Length: 390
Image (cartoon, rainbow, N blue to C red):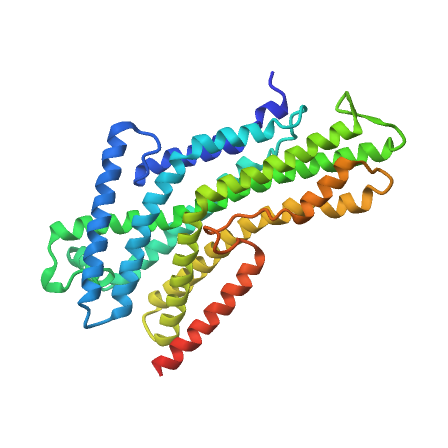
């Protein structure tokens, strides 16, 4: 019978692999053979054609520039999101190998986080349910409740994609692919944020197990601080040897965060830019359109709340990596008096000065101070827009 530790080993890697496998249904052919590859290429080409059309319409715009710009940004995000997500998932096999090697740094297996799978399933379910509800409300707000069933499809396309088609340009053979692409684009938008959140949760979970191991070792050392060796999990080690292996585990974990960040950086940049733009847009539209049907006001409030929650979720999940990478430092500084060796000193220096966080291609770090900076930027943006609008 498998032990508890064996049952939960690599729960994160197995769960994230399942999520990536499901991505083949909306344009990311991580698995599925030539059929999934061909379908993904078709979606990619259609998104590219739609984005070119949106930019062309924007360049010739005489009406609502905001609507046309928003449409171009929305589908531009979908196009780049598919490319970058595809690239990241393709590189995941190499990253998972480094992930596994980082867990083997210590001779004794690390304690496993037996809650990570449940947390990932819960997070994925919440993101999927909220995204689905928000999109259904957007469709209801686009058509209203007085739309005859036979006119529903045409009204929805012309209302939600007025930046692409005028009423005299509408044809069913154009409306169907646009309708399908709008669903793919919405899924891509939510999926890119979900990837960042789940990967951040996995990295944080590894730091949590490392910190727990450190706490256990400190506790053991304090009970044997006059001895030159300690007994841990039934094995005897010298203190220097134990602390060296622990420090190397933190080194490898920091290297893993940087390696993942290098692969994920472009997607982080795209996600944060897109979320920031549409939060500002929703706030601006809400300020300038206070009247409207109840369904529109309900959709506005829910859509804005979901945008803000998802954007905060991305930043906070990634910020936890930074917090947990240093959370054991106060414990080392307060509990290791009289338990000094060169490896303990090196570990404290390493944790104090090593900046471990995910970054958006080196332009910004995902930590909690970023939320304050973004809030300040949004307030300035809205004040400027209101001033020019007046």
